[in-house]
Amino acid sequence: MCPGSYDPVTVGHVDVVERAAALFDEVVVAILHNPAKAGTFTVDERMAYVRAALAHVPNVRVEAFGGRLIVDVCRELDVHVLVKGLRGGTDFAYELPMALMNRHLTGLETLFLPGDPRFEHVSSSLVREVARYGGDVTGLVADDVRDALRARLGG
Ligand code: PNS
Image 1 (tube, rainbow, N blue to C red):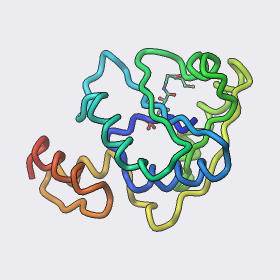
Image 2: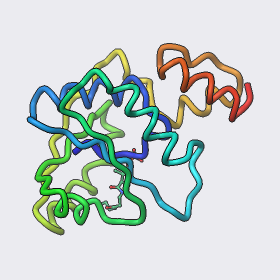
Image 3: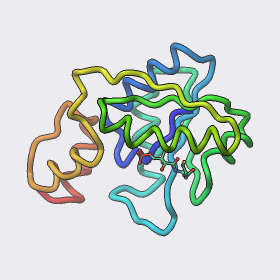
């Protein structure tokens, strides 16, 4: 499973999911959202953008889960490994406690892939911020996501 908020999906996410799909028979991209928090895109929009971005990878499916622990979702789906990309030390510091907590809860393991250096500066939050203030995010997200960000956030 490749879990995340995917608000919105970026080229960095796509790289990690493609690489996970080369390592495992089947990959679930899980869009986890907090029902009490509105994102920039609705869960349905995020799902549609992720599906479109990964339509070329046959062993990937996309699902969304709200207000649930990831370990419970993984148990239900019989998933045993989370795969996450690490852009650097800051990501590791953020991810390590979650990986340890998930292993503590049910033994669910996390596998970290080194992020492709070409995408080290790419995150959903930075893409949103750049788009909000009128910067060009072409090449960091799909063109339809870029256009939707412009329409939604201004810029
Ligand atoms: O893309 P993000 O926002 O960095 O992804 C974080 C996410 C959604 C993977 C994480 O917040 C998560 O697993 N949320 C589900 C709720 C949960 O299980 N929380 C405890 C994790 S130890």
